[in-house]
Each structure stands twice: as C-alpha cells, then as structure tokens.
Amino acid sequence: MSWNISKKITASFLAVIALVAIMSSFTYYEVGQLNDMHITSAKSNLEKMYLSQGIALDIANEAVAMRRYNFTGDPNDITVFTAYRNQANEKLQQLDAILLLQKNKDLIQRVQQEKNKYEGIAEKSFIAKKANDAATVSLLMNEAGAPYKASMSAAQEMVRNVDDFVKADEEAAIELGDLKLVLAGGLRAGKFW
View 1 (spheres, helix red, strand yellow):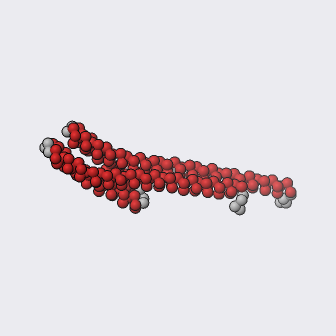
View 2: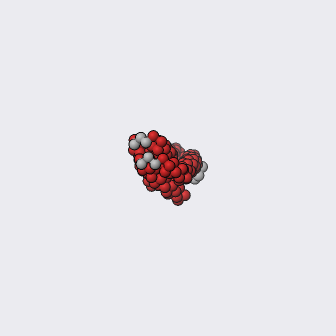
View 3: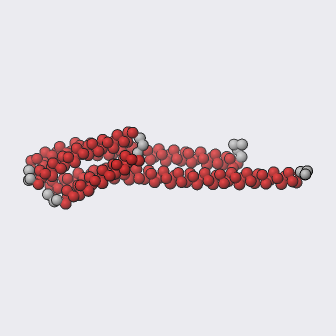
C-alpha cells in the first residue's frame, strides 16, 4: 500500500486533531482538579477561621457570664458560663485535630491551660457569691483577670496565625493553579514538546 501525498496530509491532520483532543481532555481534567482543590482548601480554611474566632468569642462570653453572675447572682449565668466553656473546649479539640503546625498546637495548649486556670477561679467565685462573701468574690474576680487576659491573648494570636495561614495557603493555591494552567496551555499549544 503506497501513501500518496493526500493520504499523508490527511493522516497527519487526523493525528494533530487527535493530539489536540487528548491535550484538551487533559486540560479539562486539570482545571477540574484545580477547582476541586480550591473548593476543598476554601472549606478547610473557613472551618479553621470559624473555630479559631469562635474560641475567642466563647472565652469572652465566659468572662461576661462570670462577671454578670458575680454582680447579679442570677443562677442562669452559671448555665451560660458552662455552655460557653463546653463550646470553647469542643472547638479547641476540633481545631487541634485539623491544624498541622506545631506552633498553632502549642497555642491551643496555652489557650486551654490559661482557660482552665480562669475557669477554676470562676468556679471559686461562684461558690463565694453563693455564700454572699463579697470580699472573696472581689479578690477572685481580680485574680481571674491575668489568666483571662492570657487566654484571650493566646486565642487572638491563634486567630491571627490561622488568618495568616489561610492567606498563605490561598496564595500558594493560586500560584499552583496558575502554574498548572500555564503548563496545560503550553501542552495544548505544543510549546513543551
């Protein structure tokens, strides 16, 4: 079987079309993978931000409930205090499970330690308030200030760290995505053959 010029041109043209179709499929697949990666990363980052900011908010609300009880004596405030305590502890555990950097895990431990000190003092102040011991309540509220400030400071640092991590993660994903798109476009254009 002899190949004349028209058959050679047709065969070459079909080969080029097949190659373009394969490269287009590859590009389509890579763009889909990139999109999935961005969605997964965004969900993970949103969860980290939600948890870190929620922890700081729960700690602040614990302090409000403790002070309100010590001023008003409303037993509902102890229930509110306990609810915020439990919420913050759950969020700390969830965040600890998904964070990878040791410095952030160390911050979580510091938040938990200072929070535990603060909550222990708060519990003592509740007992003193029930006994109508205003002097002890006043002393304990003053004593609770240092561990509360330390836990809030660590929680706010954790929020900043998570925000910085999210920004760095987004920038890296954008750079990786741009690189993949450049490579895929170059392959389609035949620039890297």
